[in-house]
Image 1 (cartoon, rainbow, N blue to C red):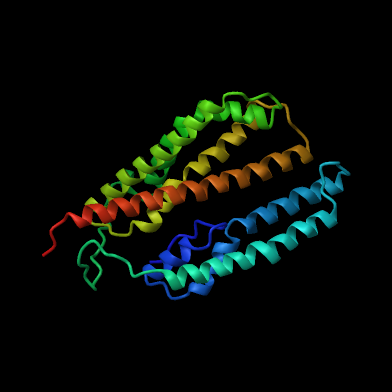
Image 2: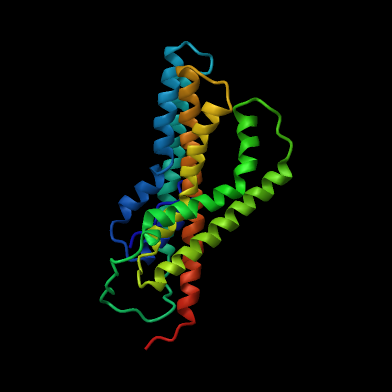
Length: 261
């Protein structure tokens, strides 16, 4: 199975995992690693900046500043990502399987209840971590979009750590239930289950915009929903990484203590 492209800044982990998981198209994996976050970020930024230009807003960046930012990515970030990917691929060791595996895949049961379907599990995996940060999220939105002063940085740090812990635990629990029903395809399920909190954050942004804020107009709407889409997508990738790594550690541990015939 391919490794989820969860990193855009550090290029070494995805190619290393991709090689350990016997991936063949490592060039495409490296390119995906390089553009998985900067690509959508650039598209949203260009859209928002174009809207600001059309409205003659002072929030619009001039074209030469945009070209400088694009040049920094193409001449610095992208080459370093390629170098890191090559180093990660060449220095990666073979995957240390915790037990002996079979060459023939086990048949996955198809008759499962609705609450064990992938979408239902993603909903549960995203709702619980979101509920842990819901209250703090209101104050963050009020600070960023409502121009209020935020001072509870200690509580913010605790909420951030709690978000990681809850995401890790709920993803591992759902992967355990999935393995218990003889479904071995845990890798992408763990990534999407862990990252599903990003969808809840973006859904909350709609509630805040229409019910809690006084923003209106095409310019403010474009800025708000565009940048909130990028922030939610960043949380999706970050928490997907947390869910994937937690599940991989859990799977390796439980199979290392199982007696295989």
